[in-house]
Image (tube, rainbow over all chains, first blue to last red):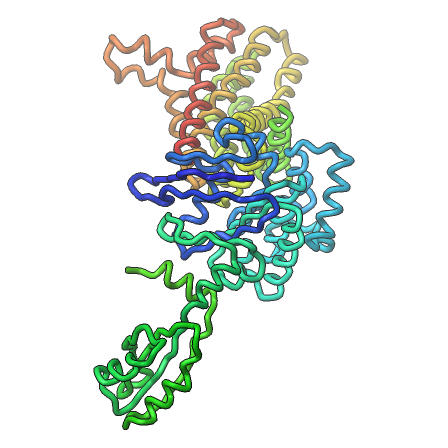
Length: 312
Length: 234
């Protein structure tokens, strides 16, 4: 559906997006994940034709973006970050205006707006002015804007930022509903969002793609190792490293800042094949160390994300 | 084309549902009406010369005030991103907004038609210069709207857009009154740049192609610069 090749964007000397490549298939919900300033919004803006790439090509279906911009825009619905709508307009007037610009005639406009009202839950606010709306309602109007012509491709930039948990759940429901038939690209820095809605994840950091895989695979990759946190009293790091490092399945022993001043914080990197907790406990029992904390870190996408986007 | 008309309608509607339109038009009518009628009866001449003479100056204030929001506000709120990603070309957006500005100027001029009509009851009015004056006023208005649009595309701040627009319009309106300060060899060129000079020619009732070309050039340069500025932003 969408093919991106060597896409690069410079702002003066700053390289915001650096030679990224990816493909999106029809019917996929792709999550674009990355820390703040990683280049997510820039990438999306180039996909929608709002920014011109410095180099590289974007192909949507068989159209090249810079040659058939209008055709591509017709297939696309885009919701920019925080949904900047015209403040002075009424919700109905705004949706009607967008429908008009998208070339719908009067009859189509009314029936489509009615459908969107049901889909996005806008019943009570159609007659209200946009500047009176709360953030969540504003976001829903933005979503209705993006879905006006029932586009094949939907691009959403941080669709749930600044919403309360109930609203987040609602918006995710809507996205999942749409994602059954459409191609959806959404950017976010919230990991649980990706787990909840997307079937594929692209992680970018500093303008480069650092991971691109199906959500399940990434989670499994994260599962290949796990961490155990310990806090010990009456122990020297050197001894700990020697003794615990000798256990089969422990890949590395690291020192971490302890919870209080006097204790020694330890992080063990373990292979996921075996549950080493018992062995570790037995080892510690045979020494004079005092164990005051023992915790296994749950393996999530978060671990992958943090490792891939860690500052050097 | 259809998109352009939609954008134009939306901008016009924005003017007329908020108080801006009414305030600006009232001020315009008060100022022009006052300056025109306070001296009108001394001259004892049935013409609109005083009204048209002042128009370049009043337009220099009035037009940047209505064009300042056209791009600045959208850039500031961010709604420009939503507009630009709809299936419209930049030309649609630009001409839509430009046309809305020109129609607004026309709407401000319509009530002033009451002046020549009143005067025609008092004396023998020569309709030639009056018609020329109104054609010139619309041309002058269009040129200033293009300049104002350009100023508005430069910044997210409406006040800065207003001031920049006003300065450029003012310069165009007054430059042929400041010829004194320029070397003799440049007088011809600079005199030609003055909007006031060309406007007065038309307002005399002489519609000369040179003056029309001048106003179209200003419109073209203004709109083209806006295009360049907005392209540079992306």
